[in-house]
Amino acid sequence: MKALFNIARGSARDTLRILPAEIPEPGPGQVRVRVAVSGVNPSDVKLRSGAQGPMVADKVIVHNDGAGVIDAVGAGVDPGRVGERVWLFNANRSPSGVSQGTVGTAAEYVCVNSLQAAPLPEGVSYEIGACLGVPAMTAHRAVLAAGPVRGRTLLVTGGAGAVGHSAIQIATGLGARVIATVSSAEKAEIARAAGAEVTIDYRTEDLGARLLEVAGDSGVDHVVDVDLAAHVGLYPRIIRPGGSAAAYATATNLTPSIPFYPLAMRNISLHPVYVYSIDEGAKMAAIGDINALLAEGRLAPRIARVFAFDDFVAAHEAQETGALSGNAVLRL
Image 1 (cartoon, rainbow, N blue to C red):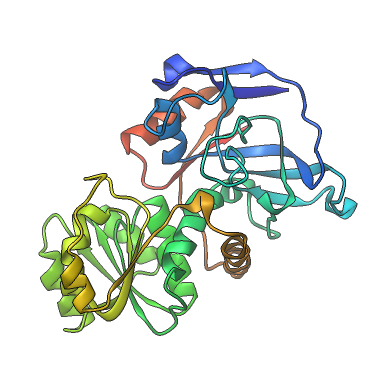
Image 2: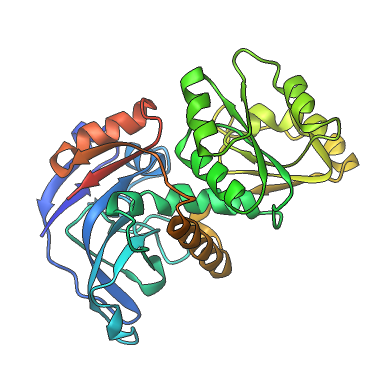
């Protein structure tokens, strides 16, 4: 089979190669998937570049997310799963999810634990399926980190990004009202189309004042945050007493300062989110809600561009530059 390997840390052009590989055989508890589409996430790009640590082997097959068809199963797995359409997550991670593994979805075949191959609802494309693992599961965990959201008001920062877009759809699909931040009129349209009731352009508007204007003086119930460092100073002002925030990134400062006492005085809880290491219960809850919303047509990740497999360098570079409003995928 052919597979896309990372052979060193550095630029996509210098470190990614399509090379031949043996077709893997599923072990106990595993399924083998014939991959149709592989997702390209920011975390895949950061891992390849070296931002998330050194190589764990001489070469590794890249990418965490994908979609395809189960064509073989290992011992202990229901043989009835052969032929099932599935979406994949955490393929390029260790069982704990914390460290990098050596196989990923950028290959014609991949073997994963049965849980990591979630059923793909009828009528949902493989391209959409390849956008669910990191973005939608991160969004689900961040939306629900502090409990159910029905009837609550949420702030989603970066509402036009891959995670933010899914967070808006998941939150509204589960009964929440959503306010989203954006950085342009075009991105405001994307966030509103996803279900945001109000958008706030943080580049041209006073986020704190505008948010209290639309959410009420007590603030929002919960924040889904793409940049903790940029917003944590605002939390005591914009989150109601007893409210919460879940942050899945902190791009502007990797070691942000936390205003402990202002947060404590309002009993605001913080929930850092790292999708790869969430527990099995949270994974199962995410799969259930994501698939239900997909089947209902209430979750539709935004695909910015579909790349041919041979265009892997362009795909990584497009993701790396932040030029895409939505997900990038490779079609095998």
